[in-house]
Length: 140
Image (cartoon, rainbow, N blue to C red; front, side, top):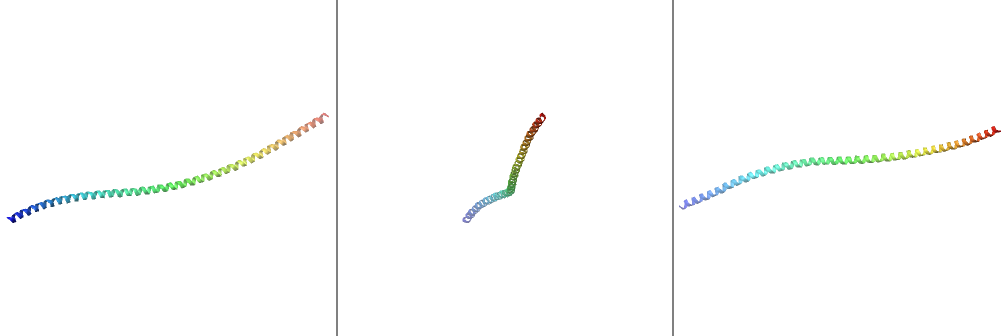
């Protein structure tokens, strides 16, 4: 009976161990399922992260290209501004020279007019003198 009792006891322990083992297998399967889900989620996040990094690199390339374009446009604008300034200075210089030339020509014309006026006055005086002389000689 003692052996029979031991067998019953061992069977009971074996049944308890089987229950614990079955629960451990269920827990292991559940953990395996959760691990697989977590790995799938991690792969999904990694794929999204890689996609975002690729997009970020593309955007960075676009930003770099835009910054290069902006720098080139600014350089061109500075060159155009410099060219415009040189043209303005040349234009202003040409206008000053033209104004001086016009002033010189105007002064020459004034001098000519004064000279002609003096000559006319002189001729008028001379004509007056001649007319008086003619009057005097005709009256004699």
